[in-house]
Image (tube, rainbow, N blue to C red; front, side):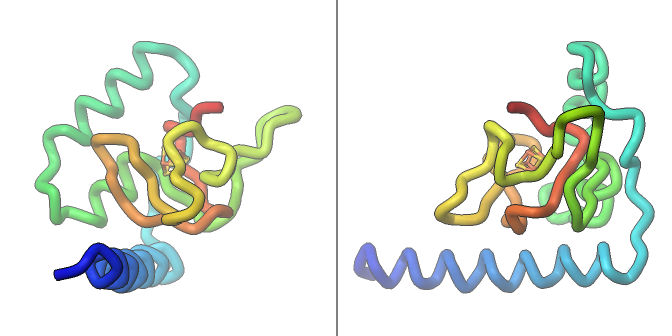
Amino acid sequence: MTDSSIKTSQAANDESLRDQLRALLKDGLETEVEPRAYTHEQVLDIVARLQQLEESNLEEKLKTAGFTLTPYRHEDDEQACETCMYYQLHRKFCELPELMLPAEPQWSCRLWRI
Ligand code: SF4
């Protein structure tokens, strides 16, 4: 496989997975939007829970991380994937090791970090 065909196949896989995640959230999957992970302990707790999950358990990943289809607003912050340190904008992908999921720029989760 050439580099460009690997990239094309990765983009297609990402898009398909992103569609699945969007469908779950649009269908009303209830996620743990709050409390947000503002303290070190809260981050460690959520990350530890994510580490217990099977790689393929998308629903629980979305629930535990508190995904939303729109940015979360807190005081002057607009917490969206596109402004998160874990987001790879050109691939539209969350690189937090415990998530590693495709996501839209306007989605959000409670592990958002600037
Ligand atoms: S960690 Fe950041 S990039 Fe990943 S889903 Fe949460 S807000 Fe989006």
